[in-house]
Image: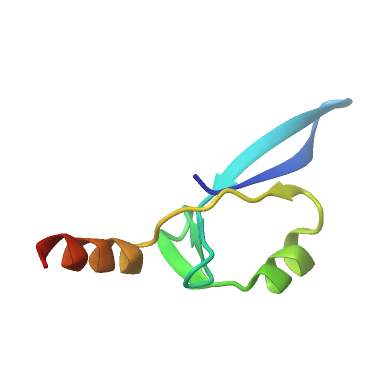
Length: 75
């Protein structure tokens, strides 16, 4: 799950549609950047300002969520 980012890439004289999936936790407002291997703080407003209308939102659980889920499962 994650954001799907669409962008056009020039390849020769042809425009190719590229799709990049980034994971976003809406509960903690953090976005995973695979190139950095890091979760960074990104609000929905900042995401829209940065990427415009080139993305689709799909929710993803972040490491903080996984810790909470594990703690709830133990109790």
